[in-house]
Image (cartoon, rainbow, N blue to C red):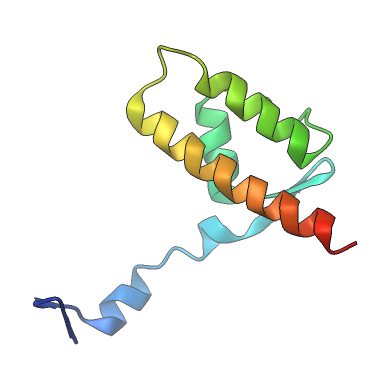
Length: 95
């Protein structure tokens, strides 16, 4: 398949998808993906002590406020924060 002038092999793309990192694990009261847990651990976010997604978002923002945080780490944490905020929104608006 050719997209924007670049050729892609669909079966190679499907093989490269890391489904395991997107699987959920229960951490206390929270459900987090393995990838989110890895990123939070690497950036020393105390996710295990967070009683709610809202509290976890506060903890992530506190780490993001660190002026010495590497740009790549900050980008990953921003992505995790965005995903968790979206999950929190949908979990709390369906009730």
